[in-house]
Length: 241
Image (tube, rainbow, N blue to C red; front, side, top):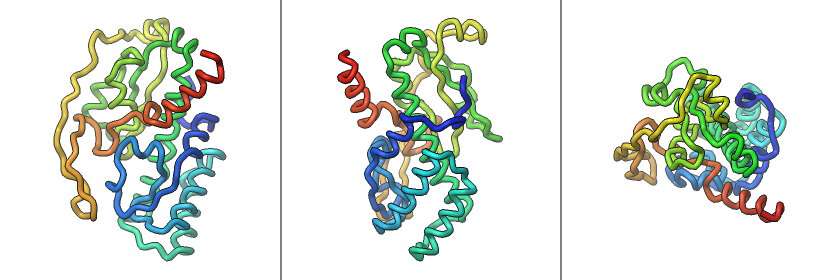
């Protein structure tokens, strides 16, 4: 299995390039699967500012630019526009870079997983922890979980499942499962919802329902949101299926 981010690929690039740039005042202005169609940087309220950030992240996705490269762009963009942002520079750049790169990667992989022939050979999804130094307890419990790809559990728990989450989802066959000494779960873990109030320091607070183990704003599958459905339908039409 290829490691996360080892190579850029067309589906990931297409996903990001299909986004529409939007200005926002806070991170709660748009929510969950709205991010499948929109590129935003919280607090970036000028179109030119958002466009410059978009171009930098697009470069990271299409050309493999590193977070160090993005930080150079970030500093130049902030200086150019005189942008006053919240949070420390290293934290803010990591959130912008990693969230966009990882979510676009997940969306691209999800579109690949929709291929009917590939799905026949590899009908299961495998949840694996990433290389974070500290893991959420719920994510540790999910490590090694194998479920059919059509299981609704994946609608919530396809990574990325929170800020800085590096968990991954792999497409596997029964032979893969057997070789790794795993089993296909008879039943998905229960989805237990909690209520949280988010964005209380900004202009657009929300009261939201969030599954345990997921940070607010991440309880969706970027590849099965509106963009993913449109691309899957297009692929099917192009192939005559």
